Amino acid sequence: MKLRIAGFFSKFFSLARKQQEGAAVGDLGPYARRILSDAVLFNEIPSPTEKEAERIHFIQRRLNEFGISEIINDGEGNVAAVFPGSKPTNKYALLFADIENDSYSPLDSFARLSAGRASGSGLADNSVGVATLLVLAEYFQQNDVRHDINIVLLFTRLACQDEEFAGLRRFLASWDGQISFAFYVTGIQQGNIETHPLGHYKMTVTAHTSEHEVMENTSQVSAVWVLSNIAFRLGTIKWDSKNNTTLNIARIVGGVGFGFFPSEGFMELEIYSADTKALDMTKNTVEATIEKIADETGTAVEFTVNSFIPVGNPKINAFLTDILKKVHAELKIKSNFVSVPDKTAILNSFGIPAASIGITRGKKGLGEEYVELAPIGTGFRQLLLLLEKSIIHGELYS
Image: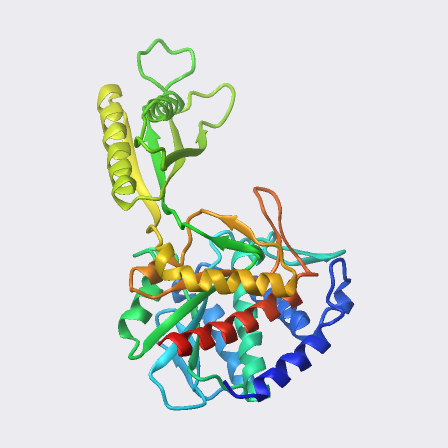
């Protein structure tokens, strides 16, 4: 690691020294302010769209403005900026962010600033992560920062309609280099440390029955009755002896309201498990149970898997987890140890250690989504320190 990097850290820390809890927008450090600015602008670009062309254009334009020469665009929704190391090497550190916003709406994604917060649908998960990588690219370029290995910043689509993680899988399959470790940069999970990443299925069950009047004398069951019966049946099943697998009925929606027979509706459910075999077995049992109830009631029922995250590998990620704990202690970030589905598990399936990094805190709820402004500067410093310490660890133990 070149010694000048320490000087750049000191420079950044002094610029962001005023970044404390409860700080106003004007008190944010320059890098934190640019993260906020780019996140707001990016969040208002419509998504999801065909290959996310508008969002890709925004990212590539910003990278060009920084004067970055090595930019890769595969034309399928992946853009990467590559920063060569200080010495010839085939090793890379990968930092990536998700560019899609499946909760976008013209009104709700229009960012609003209030005391200590920025609100807007998409900010919490996607836009803050993308903006952070853009500002990191600017920081590297302006300060001519070079590490002992190459750095690649990837802007990708994680939830593609044709295949989950299609963009990331395509990038990993075609990359001609050794990825030593990876960080998924996201919004509101600052302080979270994934100790045992769970596998996860998200599914939708849709029911259609014949239409008739509410008081019509018929034996036809309603869509709401069918979906409720499915939920009840699934709730009585014990999924595994160790209770490592959970099925959650996320919501049931059916009918149009009072006075109308509910002839159509849908149910969203999800499965969590720490065991790959149990996860797949549960998914197959759920599907078989739904098909059985559909046959019993003569109802047209459709079963769709919306997304899948594999079970992560905590052993592969252990050194990153240890480094994350140390960085949190150094920056006085409270560590929150969690065991939830983590998109970095796809990297583990390629044998790559990976961790998710939250830049700030906030909330993503049904009617409200916001990010806190005060922690953004600390979140950016966290990323810089994690990168440096992870590279040093890799060089010492390679």
